[in-house]
Length: 288
Length: 343
Image 1: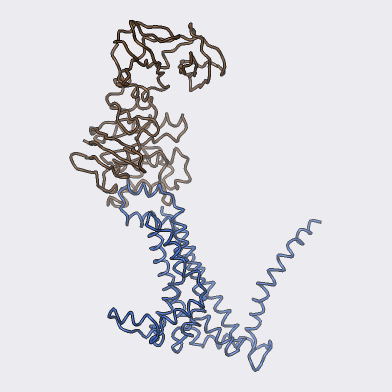
Image 2: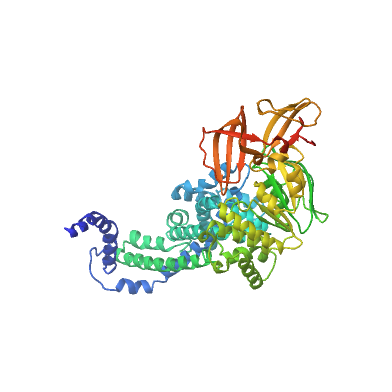
């Protein structure tokens, strides 16, 4: 009789197996196969795909590039988002209007937004270069030169996801009690010191949450790269997800792309776990 | 010396302070007494720099503070709310103003420890404020204010949110603590006349954003300058009884009394302790409050609401009939303009 209680767990377990475990286990099995366009099926090849992956410099370069892109964009998104949130936190003229305006980029579809930015960055037809020329900076090879293409991808990512940081940090700021700020004024802390000693530490937990969510999301960047640069020029803006997409969906090397995906997944889980612990220690530390 | 001169302050078009002028000597404790909304907190906040006055001047030893930002003023303050830094432990909370003032962290921590020992929290230095009781949190705030050694210490009803017993104990502790703060100008805001009479070297009575009287507590209590001052300083509230003076003072159904006053309309301020049970006037009990060993009885007598104070616990219920006598000769007489008249 008592064991019947486990029957009630069955529907949930089945769903879990169906939507999480099965795809994962299937991918693991595929990664040990030579499944490709000429040789479809689960032909066992042992660790061949993983051996090939280890020597695939393009994959590791894409991962390194992704790390730079993710860390760079998320840090800038956090900084800008915090600054904007501070700007409209207190009594500012038309702050409600600004709060809505700042959120617009986040509401747009990434593909649509990337098409718009590709138009803006277009080196001869886009509106950005004439403006830069007008103010004396000169035209920039946004999408035809490696470094500038990388910067272009970063700009679009920052533009689209800074509002997310803004939203979370503003919610955090609005939830802070007013009393510690009053105490800080009396205790001799000016605006900058109050920010460093009161506002910032009190937003530690929210900051960690916001940064982690964005790190996870940013590490999956795909649409922006696909539409804006297609990973180019050359492979200068190719990220892990985009490279795995090329191997899997363009070259149809399913077995190999499964091995790439699983390796990427393990690296991300380990890295983000370490980053989360470091962030918690740095930002939500016990200040005793 | 801390001086405020013709200080006026309006918030949301409501006047909070109107032409306040006062001075506070170093090393004295001044109690600012007034009912809720009298302007005590506004005055404290204006001195601390948290509110900017519309006009007037605040100065310490001749140095003008009026437009100085709060973080540049040598002021410490304890408020009604238990204000601490939730993300810091108790020691760091108390050390905060010292660190901001540039004191080295080890020295600040040592001073914080000493201050916390003085307020009886030596065993709780590593806890967060949220792990403390309300009374302990307020002790942390007091320690933080004391450790700053500011020449001006503002205490804005610091114990109002504590229970009665704790309030009494804290008040005694605070008097002891402040005794060691030589040279500090202490302002203590309160709504409780007893507290004000116990604590201050000087008392300032406030009503509707104005100072209605100031002086030594006993003097002000014995001789309030106006009916408003008498109402502020008396707890239970003084009973205002209107009468008409002819050859004698005529109180209508309450009788007559041989005051020597020019003919006219007056108000007698009769303290609650000057109404006694047992007497010719039949009153109806409307409410009874037992506070400690005292009984405060609210009465209706000849259409007049009166409050009687007895130094004993007497069980009474609303609707009871009670004979009372009024010691009219012990009352204070106020003219039609509200000013007290000598009798």
